[in-house]
Length: 308
Image (cartoon, rainbow, N blue to C red; front, side, top):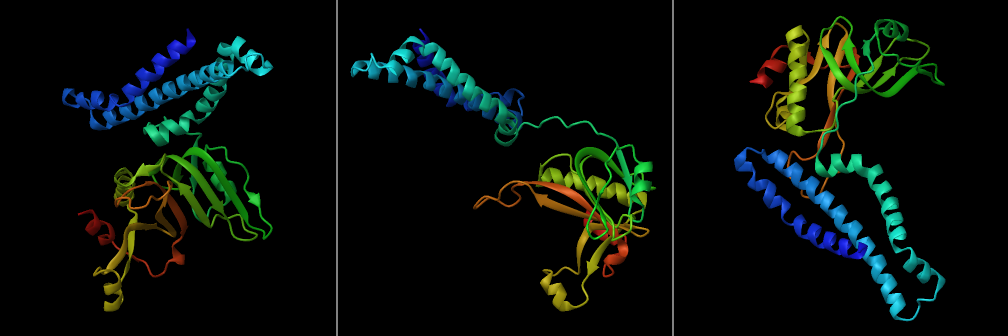
């Protein structure tokens, strides 16, 4: 009975793999969005592929036993055992492979299907700024971060991969659902000199990341942070900048002695001949003393001209 059910499941699932795309895309005129149709198609194909694969495993075991019996190996201990316990052996294979599928399922659903896993709750608020001591940052924060490591050169280094909200001292702009921080001090000094904060809650395609970053930059501008950029000092520099007289507009922000720099990292693997704008990225803040970048020019046009 089991081989017959497996044969039916294999045939039906194989045929449906080629049909589900047409079925879901036919529902788009009825109100189903293209994004959801594509996601449902990928999810259905994935599930049908698993059904087809598991059914074929059972059929292969059954065919193997029949062929061994046909060539006269029915009396062999292993073949006799398989013939007597075919269902149990098949189920054991299913359980073993199913465990692997369950372990890989979160990555499959995110990377192949495109589902977005709900964000983890924030563990607390990290309040820090350049020039603060580690102890001052801990006193102002609700995030229970561990004591940074005392390095061999006398500096302190704190690194953690945790979900938290980040806020600079005396600023109302909150970077919610940040994912990691890097906190560094000079030698023999517990005052924070460098911060790196992973402010994007998850990997994003370029258009979504642009909107996410723009909203934070606009919030900084509204609060009084001054945008900065590099200004060309010669016509040769303008030529190298493809005719532009400034570069880095919107990337640099300063208030007092604190400098924020928006940085991006690509998180997926670059593909050959991929179209422009492909890939998934995160954005993080590199925070350091303003005095380290003396060539930056801070003026409202560094954001206003870029926003138009």
